[in-house]
Image (cartoon, rainbow, N blue to C red; front, side, top):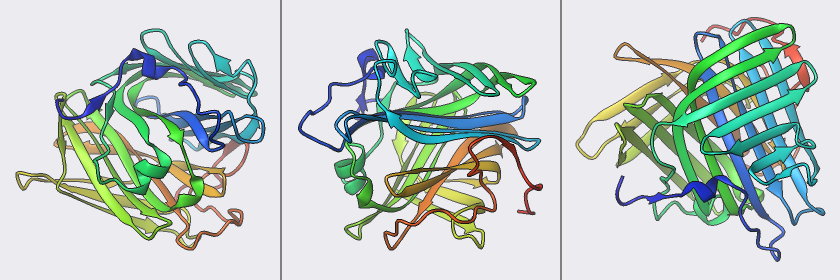
Length: 327
């Protein structure tokens, strides 16, 4: 993994803020899928200690193959119960990510209990190239990602799920100017220790468009020469039926995946609405997953989401109103 910045254990914990920067933030994110159990989801906890006296931003979504949903999307005052010695908390510590040699996610909320642990497949790595532009300059100046195995249990309502699946996670800290993002597509995922991947397309407020990606094969990282991402949108202009991505590698190989979400969650923060769609994948007989994450706001508007055909915008526990439309 030479040539890429890798981060030590201390980077799993909260970082020292720049007290003079209102937009300094420290955030952790995980996306995961347990195909056999038929459940997946996302969680982001973001601490903004200098904004409005200090806030904790929470994005949380669960989706199941049979239509169950759970969502929490809110900001609340950053309290001592959120400033964990061993990690990050939100909503008074009811949502938390901690680290004691392994990363652990725990949630205790109405109709919901979650306890999941991650085993990484490869070291914490910053994949952003030197010419990433506004994505690194204004959004994720210090950053790492990794994929892994996720295990544990979830109780959603009266149903228990035993989780043994795949995940991708990251940690970013530093200045984050949410108003510099217009559109993005991010597709992280994994098939297991032998193959993980990531790609991003980023449209910044300065008019720049950056696209880059990587493959991690048995711990060896290779940056793609080119990445092409396409998304098939619904009439609501926000949610989507699916997507595809192609990585063109330095040796000419074209690595391609087709993403078919079984459900998604919308999270809003500082005027940005992000859709995270959980997708099961198959390639050469191997099962995997990805998160097809998308935001679309090319003219920089700030209005609310008024329709979401293929994603959840309801707080708490809910159910899909109908089965997904044909892909």
